[in-house]
Length: 188
Length: 216
Image 1 (cartoon, chains in turn yellow, brown):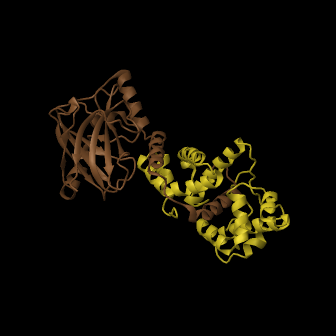
Image 2 (cartoon, each protein chain N blue to C red):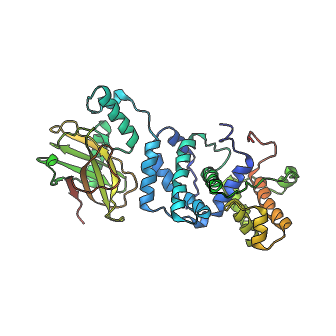
């Protein structure tokens, strides 16, 4: 597993037509894409199809990577999740994108972060702070596209508790990443 | 870039968390899938082709649609070795002292009758250059040469695709820089086959032009 450090310029090289960067990109992020694809596709052939589609999307989108917005691994994961969610919808599943709650208080949440971390580090820090059950709930929502209701049913946990755990993980990540609610250009 | 594919902060945070969640589950892709992704990726990620410089570096002087078709094919295949050009001779000169030269042995195909030359390859540098003399010129619209690199660390049924290339004039010396599709850990054998335009994913090895074997 690579942390993708120093890979930011890989995407600009791909956008510029550097074919050696293609090989480097597959070697650097193939494992990540495969791991994500396997979470969404239990059939190996489906997973392989998904991996190929994700990399096609990545070649097309490489020029839009913005290092100020996310880590290289985060960028690849975003492209992958979009494709995987789209494939799941076509199969009849209706995965949901987890949304931040409307009553989110960014000032209060950000107060808890003594430092602003690089985004990949922040994500790892958040996971390290979770209990196994909280982590499992986050996995089910972020990696398997399950609704809060489905998570509650499968984990035999009250719905309110599930929502609270998932929300807490997302808010903690936002705080550690130093993201403020003003949305710094994030389009909806 | 301000919109990052019109992504929201939330989506980016979720993606960072998703990447972190699967960090312990990552394993290398199979060599077959890796090769496929790179091959398709290089077809999709095409460099800007400077027609003038291509001609100046040894591109055959076809004209009209034939040249356009050949260049389009080169762009589509993408991974092809670079024929001639000043870089190939420079790279070769740098590699020879440490990597040594492996002489080509003609294969059974008639295109290699009287052919000579060698291949220089460095596993550590992941770079190499092939040199040919008297290898028959090919018509790229009908067939192309394709390099295969057998890796001691890989399955010999699936050698690494070294890309397709052309020989413009059989008698003259031709240098071809090697640019394999995937990393070669320890090259043991280099084989040049004759294939259909654009090359093949798996060669039936029915037309073997040249072979160069590295001592064990």
